[in-house]
Amino acid sequence: MVDPFTFLNPPWLRSLALRLRGGPASDSCQERVNLPEGSLWSRRLRGPSRKLVCEEGQVWLTCEGDPHDHVLVAGDTLEVHAGHVVVQALRASRFNLSDCRTGSAREEGTPSRKPWVDSTRGLDYLHR
Image (cartoon, rainbow, N blue to C red; front, side, top):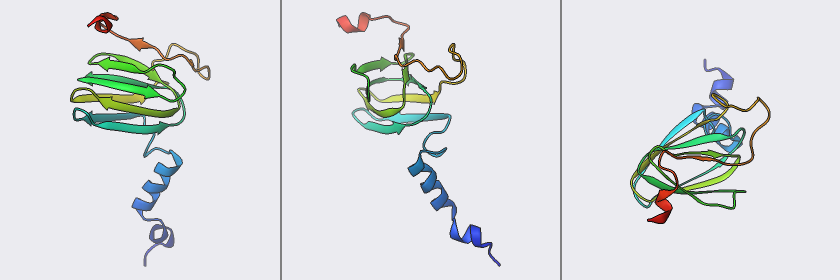
């Protein structure tokens, strides 16, 4: 005999419900994304700030509530906050989106509302 709960709640339905509610399926602690050149990735983030790390290539991104767009290359990091985020690969790229709660210099419960960019190459790319 099949358990009624399992029968009425198949795994695909639970996964869909979690994604629609912004649960673990769409807001896991870490997500690695590969993008071919020119392709887009879009996500509505919920919860605490996240770190977006460009691991390979070059990406352009814009975040809801941030008046500035950002261009990241391999090694760059950007803190993104809850809201809609759109990333486009300017070159074939790979980036990692992870939870900012670990390794944060801020105290728990006091999120920074100002995004920061941590670049190993400074701002010299703006003059090219």
